[in-house]
Image (cartoon, rainbow, N blue to C red; front, side, top):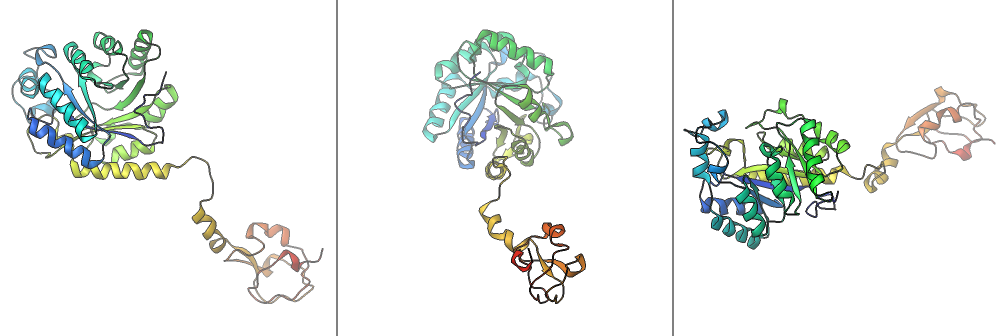
Length: 345
């Protein structure tokens, strides 16, 4: 196993702004969404490349969430959302110009071939194709890194797919995304604790593909260790199309990425150490041992003679038991700090 080069080695989470089919078949809208992803600070944008006649039967029904904004069959909906090979070439060139990574999920053999020839640097496999071994075989044969989404899958299915993929190419670069295939996905069904479980189980970078409402869940996934975040973006959640309602706006995407970057900073190294700020404040807020009232020389100190006060003095309050029973050799005034030099040997 090799770590994909696009996974940043400095701990920065790789963020994919999923445009998918939110272009609604419009190149103008597609480019506006690319511009939005660049503005938001995403590392990549991702489209979906398919040919409706190779993806679904003519009679296949729409999913319930698709029926909210579409009528007819899956085929009719998808046919309206197809982009041509020429249009994908134009979109990749536009991404190159805007200095953002172009990605597209292929849903059929022709799309794999074309995207490979177009020079796409890695392949994303959607959850619906996790067990589509003919498609996976073709993608593995390109020799390019693969991102696998795992919505709707069991661990046994994921293990079987990984075994198959690595049997074809033992050195293939793989990343795995936890995902809940529901649009939108309610928080109660997201099961984010799968992310650290994947990290224990698989020797691959682990990420999260989010279909929930809002931006808080990808931030939580980052805190749990996700190295990659994928999230749908739109210019307007009320636009017609199957995925707009479960997408975030460009401004929300920008805020999400800002929060992800802050979360990365907050994770630190895992080593418990004092920060420079803590070193400065520690003497002011930690407590030292002081005398509660005036104490004359020769007093044998008991607990009732002592009080723990700020700032930290010579003797920290956790040395209480060592001080009790010692004899002071100097007079001490009320609330005067104790020092080790105050005692007889």
